[in-house]
Image (cartoon, helix red, strand yellow):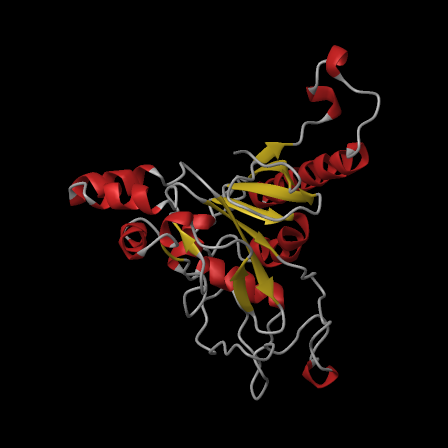
Length: 280
């Protein structure tokens, strides 16, 4: 909405219910809300600013709070990260790896592949079966990737994100190990995983869109370019999707042979987020 004083004076003369309808009509149908997990504090931060409706004036802010809420993905809401999960897609990016010990002191290293909880975040011993119980007189061993999966499984918004999870490939590789290990004990299941590949160096904003990464055989022969800038990366992205899909099928076959239910009904898709393209 224009910042012209004349326009605002005319707008303020409208009945309150009309103003409310105008504010709500200004809300986008959907947004990509990128967030990042910080390893040093074991917390999440938004990578874009709050929706525009929350930043115009006090009236618009109140109307916006009736639509959006703070993202609840950890013990406290994520600061300045407002979402409406009925229309928005939360995309989680981290730099963690399955064996990530970059910011953990050597004194915290326990058994092979097990680490104490990073500083700044206390996880109590009364955790659900997702996390193995520690041995007696041993600090609770948690990797960053276990903390992320714990948050997704045990927060209101995390449970809403899980069925259609949008993450970068490194994040999924990290949490996949623990998810599949506890697959039969989890009440909330992952149904669809979108592996997001960021491209370009432009700023992140609400108008960014995710685009499917098609395999070479999915593009009609007459439309296949001999080469394009992200050809190699697209091949890797599709290979990752097929690899995870094959892994699920192999585990399901093993469960079937053991008389266990088939719970890994996960579909995978690769999409790109071009930060140099905006949709106005």
